[in-house]
Image (cartoon, rainbow, N blue to C red; front, side, top):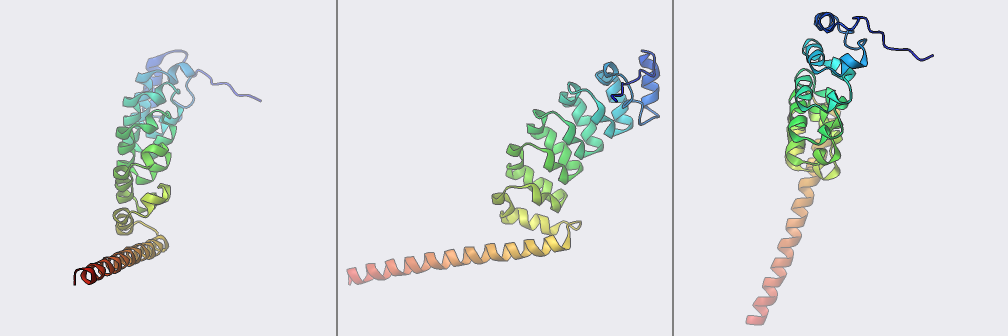
Length: 192
């Protein structure tokens, strides 16, 4: 059985504006017309940020409204339009509030090193939403380890990853020195 939204406010915007400032369900239960009204949506979201998820699709694509919502809860990025999930300013606002909100950003934004680093600094667990290249970036790994809220098991794994990364770099450098040494010896033999 399909349920319909009941217009509890008899078309009176003022009644709804009053209600959304005191009742977290008022916006959720409002008619589509009111959930598409920027003034009503702003009032509801300022009172209770998660009310954003009940805003119309049109308002979920409104940058100013999304920024207000993200101020209260970065994970509300999940309900923003796909277009806004590609917007650096939007994603930065979300991760300032909660680094884990990176999971809702577009793939392109997730692969932006600066944004990834900021998310991981805010919450080391955000590392799980990065591509392999960024997961192996030494600065990002160190930021994840420094986060006091990070899971100790993940920290241990990341420390191991850093050790493996450094060992590979040392091995590569030693191979390079060996090649250089061989070339210098060959040149020395040719010259003398």
